[in-house]
Length: 368
Image (cartoon, rainbow, N blue to C red; front, side, top):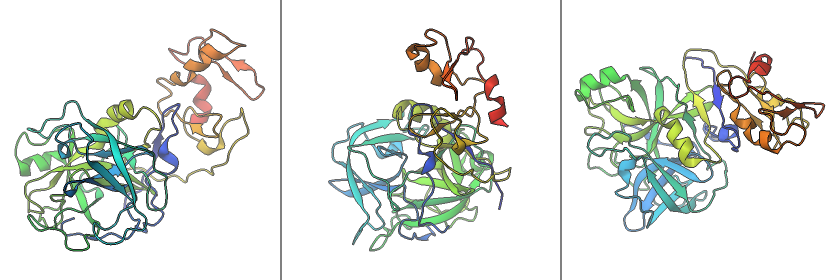
């Protein structure tokens, strides 16, 4: 198994999900799969219609939003849609289940039903959910993530167990492990022009394990150290679990900017997945005293303490870490009108007049 280093990305002004995403407390670790233990995949949701029940899967990405596939929705109308969270079986008892209606369906503006490109949608829940051991968000692959061929991935859903064969009673959530297939090899198997850079493939060359009808919109995830990261959204395939026909998934890392722009607040946790370097132990998380460097983000670039005892980290601070200072530039009384000010331990104001060009030199020590 590869060891990996986790790069955490959180945006200023948001209550980022990095503290909870991708960490299922009850997970000690589809077609050709097996029933998943209760609570193993707490971000998995069942999207249902009041008319005909379950039709697609999805993944919880924060307290208010679910991510799924655009092809699951014929329009942007949320009428009649229901999202079930904490659900294990489609029939029978679900003691940990929570239900929400949908207030908004946002399909990617450039989704193509002809090419299956940009097959991603976001659903705003009618009200926020409370995280439990059975309901938690997944972390999302950041834009610079790398999922090379062979990367171990897990797919989950309530879809058919074979083409035209429904999941038998009580329709328990299924899980299966599949390896990533690189896009060049996937294109050679599925045909020229089918696969593009917004897609990621996974499956066994000999077949036997795959997603199928009813799994659409559900997550494909990979484990990085102690965190599960969503790499794909179940999109399409030719048959189910056929040989030389891997499943095709929407590549989540391509949509970080669109997801961020759409969700805006309380952003999902984005993690740069790269299976080439060693895991580093997480530093202890301790609420720091006001106006001091946060101990909960030691070694992370561009950190600073805020009033919610949370550490806002800026992984790209060498290029630009000044956006978080914009509001302070206008509100400060002691340094009014000067760009990039912040208060230090002695409550004096340090001002960076050139912050729009470069305000990162003061962070060099924090980054090392």
